[in-house]
Length: 426
Image 1 (cartoon, rainbow, N blue to C red):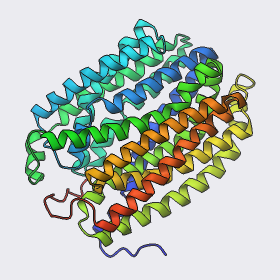
Image 2 (image 1 turned 120 degrees about the vertical axis):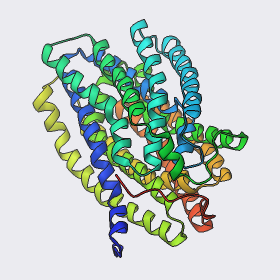
Image 3 (image 1 turned 90 degrees about the vertical axis):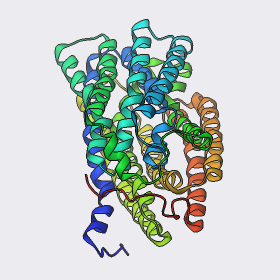
């Protein structure tokens, strides 16, 4: 049975995940078109290098503010100029570490290393501004900031492909510049005083407990970002850049829709759970999201599995050799990731510090299993790498479901009424 909608605002709340998924879909579609365009014009090895650059950036930019953005979303930290500067300092530190790793572990060119550092620094401010809008449930503005880099890459990729540019660094530049645009737009939209009026009792400065919780969020986010990119980090070392290019192409076509749905569910569910003060209301929200994940995840997987290989053959001929087993494996991992999004958003929204620490530890166990599984099964090619990485997703899903159920049963954080309900505006 689907839930009965008793009030217009409640109905609007249930549609938030689909609404946000559409916003993320815009950016995801642009990102996908950029990759698909460049996959045709770039040599396979260079497209693999671009995929590796995207993987490094995908991990680094998410960690840029070192968890301060998560505290803003949870309404446990004030969005203020001072905290924005703190996030920028955190972003500078993250940028230095990311650039060092890109140079030493992956031997990227100086041009690419500079792009990594600049994008991470800009992303720290953009993510703080987006977090403030998300906390106020102004998801349209928040998603505008979040999707600008994808839109920049999509437009840039299509333009570069139409001009026949075969240097992958220009595609990387189009993506990195998008984070700078996002930071500029975010600062233009920033309304510190308005956020302060709408947040009840949020501290102006992060204290010891806030930093502890922020570090827990950093650990959780770092592990899931690594898990998302584990195949792209293992494949170049064990199978080569051409196989990475093949994986990136299939992941773009089959995996991208799941990332859109995963992002839409997690992005919209977290602030709604924080705004809901009753145990029954929170349980109802989670049940609805699970049903949505089942319908869209399984149904979408069947469609993608049928269409993926014919589409690749039609547009790329024999340039990329794609097996049905690889398509099915990536689709199955996508379904698991959608279910994980619901459980993880629940833990992040209402989990206490003890639950977050457990989630953090189990997340890193999942990363270790994924990396070990991918390396161990890489002898079976791309399908083996994907299957090995799937072990990590299954462990992470089991941990998230267990902790989410515990948080829902105990009532979770936020029941004390210290939080002002966010405005249900977009």
